[in-house]
Length: 634
Image 1 (cartoon, one colour):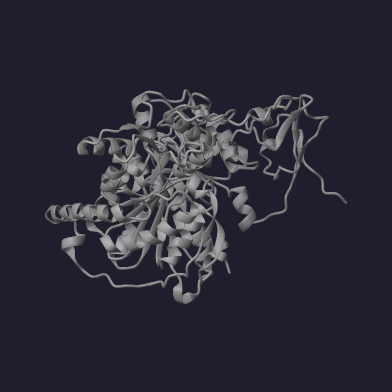
Image 2 (cartoon, rainbow, N blue to C red; image 1 turned 120 degrees about the vertical axis):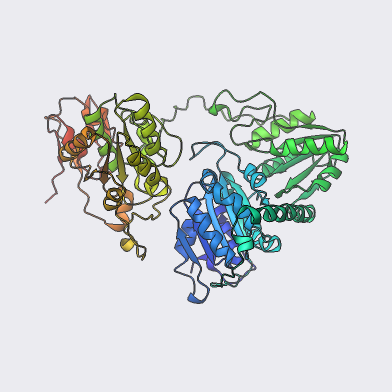
């Protein structure tokens, strides 16, 4: 049995932050969970997906990978309105997709605990932007809690279900990458009882948001805010640590850096720290008392100055004369590599212990000598390791065939997924990207505005997530471009989760498979063709015909992700080699596709047999036919 399913409490277990959130939900008796996967939150649904079949039948919860975040939230809302405890998880940009139902769900409320996880990504480790989703709590009027580490994440997740039921409102829990992916000893309590089914009780005057109903629901939401603020004032997650006439107000993972820094600076008797965990609504009375007790306050928060602005406004409103500092106006790092630049806090990128320690020392005039840096003199510079498509990735073959046909002059809108790496040389087939699904819709705009040849790329999971509506729009408005759907049979970038286009029989699930080609034809696309990208000649011919078609055409490039294929369709590995006598050093195999299994030695291409998976792409594009499979020994 998995340790997360330990029925009793009383022991600590080393957990990833995302695993701790799962345990917290299980201890709360969660019965229903939905998601769309996205880093840094992906391990939460992945763990729930893995555990669901191990649970005893009597306490089994329902879990699904939803088509997108909007659908996930709406599905979860229906379950919570029906009276079962529900968890809905996504990354920060997923809340943008779910924002439409989120705003009105705050009015409608719930009949059982509902927790919405938003996982923010400071420093953009795996995201297209760096937004601060604390704003969503303020925009929607929903309570928000922010854990500083895995143990608190587990505790808060369980508590949020209770708080949600007390208020009759969904509750948001905001994490950041360092909380999601940290490990900590997490104490367990016993698993909660799961209420698997309930009965929806009709109440149109709460659940049907016509204007006459919503006017009253808005007043209800404002009253919930007042209730939540009173609870925040008493919350143990809002605590003051230490003593002194210097104050720090902080939240989230930055609170850990602050506590370490205060100790490193020997300032525990000088600095009093207000650590916020229940961050919206803020405990204004408690903050006001804190401000009156200190001579100067530093606000330590990653990304936007949300706490800083709120605390300054509160001080002004209450007539509290105290210096409050945080972000340095107008001062930002020159570039992302400067995230450790000492001496100030920025609105960009995540913080680190060194930066927090130095800003605290500078702000409060504390003496501190940095430890001597370890000398790296004489050490070789480590080689760069840019992100790259895996050896044998079918996307590389598709890109090659498209570029051979459409050339460098075509415009290549792209989308969110592994294939975003097509932006890198030598592929260079990514010219425009905003968000999930934007490749399809933006292609119509670019082709209409310019008349240029447009070939766009989208993955199979992303197509189901938010590409379908853009394609309907393109057909309806007679746009003219070619869409290439890179169908690798899984949601590859976030960890091989299923989606509606995945035939899940191979992984033991009973979900219904929705094949792409009939779906796309059903949307009215007149020219649809499915190719096998490693059959290069046939793929190029099909792509050429699709691009020549006047109107919207779709090419489905269908080949399993090789990493996923190892699990569901393992095959005998066939390794290729370069025949030295035949190789003339053209290096087309490297210059055009840059498979990481290939390298150059003495002016000739070489293949690393440990990385080659035998896709044969390089063999098909070598002008000298110098790349052949290695003959089996014996």
